[in-house]
Figure 1 (tube, helix red, strand yellow):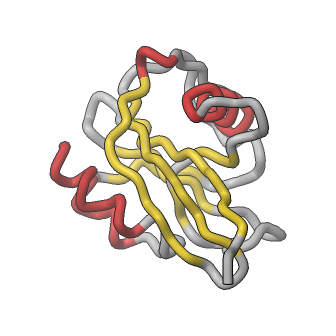
Figure 2 (cartoon, helix red, strand yellow):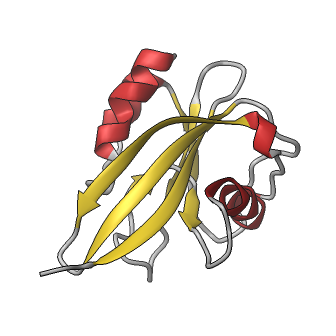
Length: 134
């Protein structure tokens, strides 16, 4: 049986102290309470980098450019009713201070502590690539 393919982009914002920003999914959303890398769905007609720039501005009030986004790895995960494909980009350069614009909790986390935060299953395979990078 074929499932709908959902393309979502995610970003590991990495601060000068090599900490990675995680956002907690707010109440009312699927997988509420789990921690994830900021990002969101790629809309029709968008390329992944454009979608990520838009999502970072909407969710966190930060701005960046395509040249500041480096693709690192991706996750391919099958959920009950859809299949998720999620490229993960690394960003070390952005403008503005990351603030919660959608009511989600934010936390800067050291790479070795990422597994201390419960995450959606699709995010878990991304952790080793980040730990190896930093």
